[in-house]
Amino acid sequence: MATVNPKPDFPKISLVTPSFQQDRFLEACIRSVLDQEYTNLEYFVMDGGSTDGSVEIIRKYADRLSGWRSHADSGHMDAVQEGFQRSGGEIMGWLNSDDRLTPWAFEVVAAVFREFPEVQWITSMYPMVMNADGLVLAARRAEGFHSEAFYRGRNAPFNPRFYSCMIQQESTFWRRGLWERAGARVDIGLRVAGDFELWSRFFEHAELYTLAVPLGIFRIQPDSFSSREFEPYMEVCRRVLAKYSHRPPGKLESLARRIARELPDRWQPLTGLAYPVSHIVKGSGDEPYAIRQSWIV
Amino acid sequence: MKFSIVTPSYNQAHFLERCMRSVLEQEAADVEYVVVDGGSTDGSVETIKKYSSRLSYWTSRPDRGYADALNAGFERTGGEIMGWLNSDDMLTPWALRVAGSVFRALPEVQWITTLYPLVMDEDGMVVAARRVEGYNARAFYHGRNVPLSKNFYTSVIQQESTFWRRGLWERAGGSMDAGLRMAGDFDLWARFFQYADLYAVGVPLGCFRFQRESITSSRMDSYLEECRTVLKRYPYRTPSGVELIARRMARLLPRRLYPATGLAYPVFHIRQEGRGSEWKIFRDWIL
Image (cartoon, rainbow over the protein chains, first blue to last red):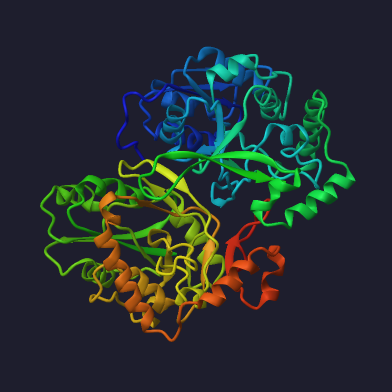
């Protein structure tokens, strides 16, 4: 579905797709990017030397890509890093080869970054998932994000008493300025949870805002949540968070939080346990976007 | 599972192509698509002709309005699942695939809508999703889904996100009320609720285009007036002031205590849990 009214002053968006042996999904991924017909897009597909049909798919769209390659690399994050190094857009993000964007993602991301110069990175308030066949299964509402809550384990699933939700990578976009302040790199040594590690450095510089529009769709694959994938993921999260001085809530605090959650929303800040989170929302009608705050306990 | 979708169109050439493409470019769905134009003079007909080979039927001639166009359209269809899409709105690309999968999995479900209605601005940019609470027949008749009683109303039923089985359509009369100029959808929902609960699916399905003129006070007033007329046909009244205060206080309770108040309405959601393997029905309570 094409962007109906491309606006000439929309910022350049740099998107990278790291690809390796996912030819079943790659075309849906690439088309979810190119079919938006966002006029100021720079799109790189970095393939790690696939031997399935991936390269043929990439070639089919090569004339609409800003760059692509296919050769052995040292993994997923290496491909992401190389793509970003070749890019120059003001807004950045990546899309794994088995995931998809919603058809309207770029224009709304661009509009929000233009409207709010103070916002450094955003993610969707309504992350979506699809199954292995690409059937969209669910959206859900994320509560919002806060740096201290993040460092204490709110967004990594190893502390069930405090964990709420992950930050959906394919729904997350940031300004190049933030990327540079955070070191202009992803950790290419990580096989999993490279996104989580990047978020931990972003949070040192800026709070994450949620946008009330679905942006990305994660593909749940049979092995996504298997212990083979999951344990290493949690291990990286643990290691990343150990670098920071924040500690997860203890038993007593967890109990206090549980009680505080029973209170009506507007009383929650009075408990002293609540973290403010910021949402970018649109009221009814033609009101402009506005930043609203709510609280999480 | 075949879908019958009708688009009533009249002088919205500006928006029509995107609307039609959102139906014709659906992911994996068996669709019978009918466009009924009321004799547009603004280029709409050229747009319809451009896609006519992919339409199961289209026409362009003066009609007696919106409900008339829908009735003419639905008469030309035979699919098992029905819905309509106004010429300025759009479906999400996965809408019919998801709806079909839900209707296939849950034979007891007669009609569905989304838990996450989307809104786009006049330029077609998708600007907001929100999560609605879900729907209940009794609450509907009490005025929960029409902005008449401000303290009780929560959200409308988004028409472009709503789909139903032909069996329900037939039991409910099998036509739109041509006597209503604006609130034809609301009247249809009122008749559907006589026969079946409405289930909210946890996936965005449709997108409403907000147009400034659509909420001008005169248009809004006549819409509300028609809704009032529709609700009067049913033996329910809006909650009293005392009840509204009781509801407001009850909302301060933790959610799991809602049913204990005796004031809560059950609502039904359809979603897939965790890794996702099958659609399941979940009950929640609203006050």
